[in-house]
Length: 149
Image (cartoon, rainbow, N blue to C red; front, side, top):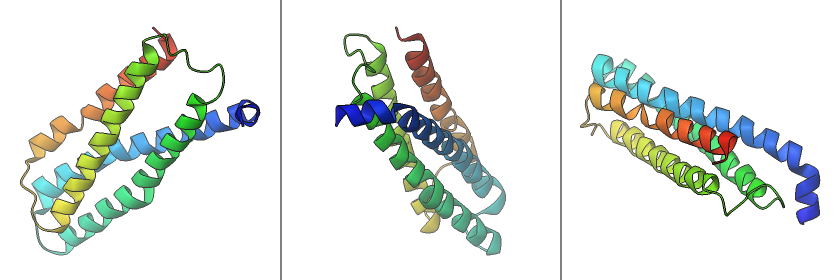
């Protein structure tokens, strides 16, 4: 199995990067949709229904599969011999950040469900602040992997 992972390494790494880019795009965009939904649309009407549909599809058709792909291909990279030096700090900071990113993903899905149920209680300002979370986590992940401290 490890020989297969070593042979497939460039493909797995490519698929991991593609998945990460897709996941990050959705994690950046969904909070912006929620800002506009909160500040411009409200909790009823045709535009509200349009935003609910866009948010739901972004979360389920793009964001969820991208996260699953990121995890599957990322774990395949972790199990590829010679890729991760577990004595270093970087795999632990990256791993913690990926878990935090997954938690943020779950929080966003909860917000989408709240909007769908007409129960949004957060302000546009709160969504703007939360929109910075994936950026900070992305910086930690990229620096961890590239610098390998």
